[in-house]
Length: 374
Image (cartoon, rainbow, N blue to C red; front, side, top):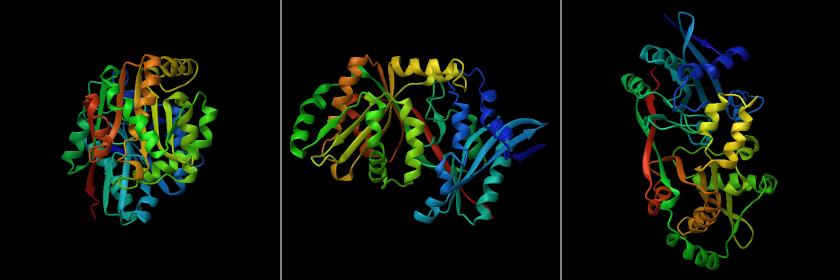
């Protein structure tokens, strides 16, 4: 018999966070999250996303043993501002028993019926800066700190239960040696001169902080046209600033400013923390912090996390400036591999940025959709 319990206490919520640690124990490709980071994400007193969203966390049991988990999310900003009457689900992990998935999804349907919503989509988080999608290809490669990993049967469970593909995401990689300077070196000088632009580089995190709010505002502006986009609020900017910026080498953040010193493009690249997180196994102490710090300083792999360009400049070759700055930084650091994190398949403008580097698609993931059953 399958029973479902809502995780309403601190101990239950910690059990919710730690469930995949047993499901993927010693798995070579699963990357554990930091337990406290997950708990902070789910804490309405700490995460400002709860100002415009709500979430309920469920654990599934068989014979008093945890066999699955799922978060049910209602993003009121999405519902009211975009008129998308959707209930989300995320942080979904489960044993290979479709009946467990079915029982968890019934809680999603209940929430949808409670608020008279139209459809379900997932797996996805609260916003576009959270993890997204069930992995459908690329099970034999290590994941990253900003993606979910899952077994192949996750996809099968959803399809058996009537879900259909909603959005497709691709991930790709290319060796740094594929980067040819002739595609951006001369062009970036001409573009700077033509539009009065300049690149900004940083040596310390403290130097970056005064620009972060402006960066997130540009993020909202540059991604507004995508069908799945939910804008980041001012209070969320502060939360993500504290959550992510400290993990990123300051020299891996690049801004492009116009002649009025206003930001028209940004890019964030992260060192790969995958192996460090596996060694940390969910905690920074006593040794996790050492592994993370070592990866931050020494990792020879980088993840292109976010890139945003003001719509007014999106067809004017501004990326040549960004690529030139990263080329200089990566060459000095001896970077070997570049990884692109999940990008919507429909986002052709982003894909075209990388065509000269001969990237190889190494992972695919998708969200699934079903109408709320009434």
